[in-house]
Image (cartoon, rainbow, N blue to C red):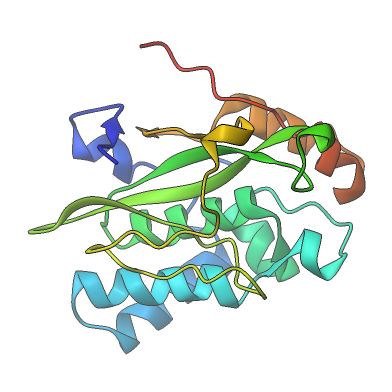
Length: 205
C-alpha cells in the first residue's frame, strides 16, 4: 500500500501532543532510557520500542481489564490498553528518541461478522532514514495474530477483507484521531468502549 503522509515536514511527527503523547513523563522517560541503553541504531531502537508496546502492555480486550488507558504514560502505568493506547505508547517512545512516528487506522469488523458492526483499529507508521515510511501494529499477538516489525514486507495484526466492508486507510496522521480520544475519555470502562469506538476515518482528500 502507498501511504498518504499528512505532513511533508518530519518535524511534525516528532512533536509531543499533551497529555496523550508525551515523552517527558516518568515511566515513558525511563523506558526510553532503557531502550537507548539496550539498542544503538535507530532501527534497533524502533524495533525494541515496537516489541515493548506490543508485548509489555496487554490488550484490554484480551485481558478483560476494564480500566481505560489513553496516554502513553497510562499504558505503561496500567500495563494494559486497547490498540489505540498501545499506538499512543509506541509513538511517544519513538518520538522521544527522535524517530518520526504517526497514527494509522483500519476499519475492521467488531466480532468477525457484518452483523456485529465495525470499529476503528489503531496502529502506527514510522520513518527510518534509508528506509522511509512503513507501518507496524503493536496490537499484541495471540492465536491467529502475528504482527511483526517488518519494513520489507508489511506484517500487521489484521488482514483487511474489503469484501466484508473493512477498510485499510493509507493515511499517516500527525496526531491521534480526535474521535478516538473522545470515545476513550467518555467511556466508563473497556466494555463500553468496545461498542463506542468510532466506525470510520473521516479525512479530507
